[in-house]
Image (cartoon, rainbow, N blue to C red):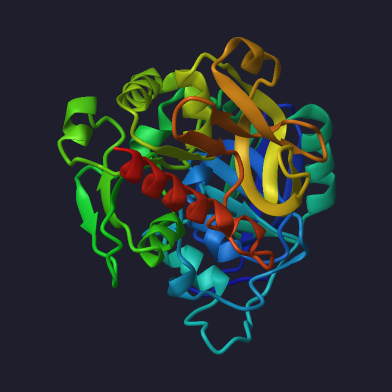
Length: 378
């Protein structure tokens, strides 16, 4: 059991809005948080997940039972700090073993004021979410000598507001324009609309030689076009895409200009909304590292990393200007779209993530080829 700095042991409790109560050992920070409980099936990559802005507003359950065994390496961060509300694991390893580790998972989360709970049945919680859907509730870490009133927590859990009702992307987007210079410039510059972008998306664009201009979520069309972009990347991010009407209106304008547009995850959903499709919330989302996606145009299957709670309605594509290009092999949900008469495409998965498979990195190269083709035709 993890101890706080004053030597007291930490305990923890989960209270869900449906009345479920789970007790365990606490680690990380002492404190109480609320949010949406979701699960990730990855065996590795917990540092990347914890710092992924797409988890903003959520309490993350890791289904793999041993978390923390290789410690924490800042080079793995996908943003400046943890973005999850809290962490749920079966076993939190306090004695990490890896040459790049600078601290343990518990030490890191305590430093960043993120509470965690261990020694709980994560399998049961995951099964509940798979059957009932994502759950709202509370995670509380406290000292063992503190009295916790479960009834009070139950009342509070029933009043937890769904974070997806807020504009979460606005909360994690950059507030200023940031320019990123590549080591070797390819002559093109891409404007990246930041809705909660992962650092590795920017890194992949830089490796290909793009100068990247990262702009806030609410940057207007004229301001974006003032940079004379060769291409646009609409980033990943948290929350309900339908709340971002002002963004997909901007995306629609960019498409009409004829600028190549590449959407990733939330960005893919916004391209779809901009062109007449609809989105909906998945029962428990796709969060993991081994989701098989079928490319309908080539017949190839790619193993992909995913993190999203909303999806594009497949039926709604029939009334849109988009063509379906990829589907999820597990549930046949939409994983990719392309516009026939404009240089525009989007993928629901994360091509920048490489948790083992590198299958999806080709989509950055496809974006570069689209930019080159459009420039030649101009």
